[in-house]
Image (cartoon, rainbow, N blue to C red):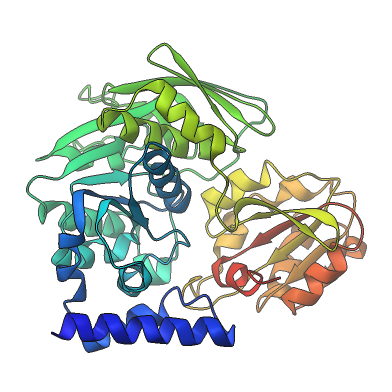
Length: 425
């Protein structure tokens, strides 16, 4: 009875929010729902006819899960998916509460790493895709080993869970100890720009530091232990990739997949979703059809027109992800960097100093810093070698975007809550 009461109140609350045009309601309705019915998510599994697929990892969750859901939908499946990336329990509850009340073939759920084990207390999963593990929000997650333990604890709660793991990440590759697992990864990478993303040093289980025969970015690559012989696992989905300015070509199982997303990091996201498609029995033609029609979700390499001029919005939130995004920035565009330090962003902004903002030192036009930490960002850019006369500080994000988009193309690089504040721009 509580479940249905929560469902009715949730739908009324969501309708009221939309009528008042106050918010997209990506978490508030879920929070209200869980207050009324704490085990709300337990009752949601009965609305999924086939499988629940979850996606976690530091970077790429939203894009990977978005691609997976799109692949299913293009191939005739009814899918429920937390499209806007609200990935804590309240966001997942929100997704079910406001969706049309009907049966779905699949659920594709993006989950915050720290909340995955809590999600599995209520909603068991059939598939788990793990993208990568990078240093992120030390105040929330702690060191990487802590984050890895969150995910391992979640995995142990699902006896029949099928894992789809990034073989090129030495920490992610260890999650297969007691489960069915398949691996995806790149054998060869051809990319015009070199990565300067910070890399963690990982030790083998024998205690010796891992070494690399190929290192693609950060700790992603072909690693091995010269002491005990441990090495990157053989891939079930081994691919080659060539990364161009606006797209990538992934070659896998004798088929070429064109991915209309920028950067090697998005090629990894696409490869994970392709592996998922194959695991469900889809063929290359069916997968490519979906890739052809996929559009980036909000803030993840999203293209928009603002003030009559093109704008590209790319979320940045940690050193590795930011450094990879910065490689793709058009230095002939105006640039807005909007940084907040709210809870969802992480209070610790030391990651700005570990990110490769030096890649912007040859920016030709305005570089506007904005958000709560606009001054800190301006200081970081000064030490990155950007002339102070080019740096403008405008804490109000909407004003910063208004100023930048008056003249030509703009690249907008926001942290998470800064991204939410420009959603309705």
